[in-house]
Amino acid sequence: MDAILTALADPARLRLVELLAERPRPVGVLAQLAGARQPQTTKHLQNLERAGLVTSQRSGQRRVYALRAGPLRELAAALTRLADTADQAGGSRETYDRYGLSLQTERLAAREPGWADGRSFTFHRSLAGSPEEVWRHLTEAGLLARWWTPEDLRVSELVFEARQGGRIVHEYRDAEDADGSDLVVGRARGVVDDVRPGEHLAYRLSPELPDGTPAFTAHLDLALRPAAAGTDLDVRFRITDSAVESADFVAGIEIGFGQSLDKLAAILTGLPTTRSTT
Image 1: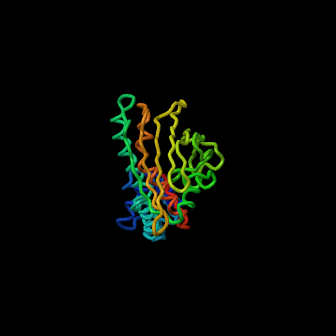
Image 2: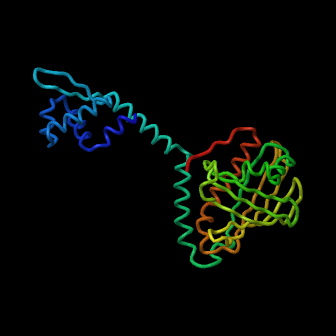
């Protein structure tokens, strides 16, 4: 496939392919139609033949070239598969586009400090596992790190002291940044406000702007209730102290935190989580 793409990348060779798609032609005629010298045309045709795109045979004093349709169909099928993967429903491109629309909206709204204060988001998930098991995943750093970032991200530092006044530190990187050489995607600091094991958890968390100042303060209130299938989790996410520069963060709350909760649900169900490529 690489050889085909390399061969077609040259405009002169692509023009010869177009001419041969109409019908087989000899070198001299191809040179005339392409507006090139015959030695150059011969060299291009030899490259196309090595790539498997054309075949040739002698006819008297002439060498006639013909296009091989099979490799082009294989290339077309491979490109179609790539396009289908990118456009699959619920895939990474759909999430990327949704975030882009949200980003435009929030950037237009962010005109002065406090612009997003009072904004709230609510989330509900019916989770497998008892309230005690869900509580462990909400408060124990080792378990929390498995789900507490959106898709395509990974926790690189996490502190969660599950007691009133306890400290929270949440740093995350790109999931494919295995050696930590890329930039930190985000960092947040916070404090725990209320702890009632198996029932209620409340904390404040402030994501940091590139200069280290808070983008906003998120007030998270998590309520757990026993349910027939396990545990019902309700989350309220409220914003205060929003800076003008926080628009990019606010735009990603609904998508990002929703993805995190979906990862939690998959973990508690015992199913493997899947990563999208954004």
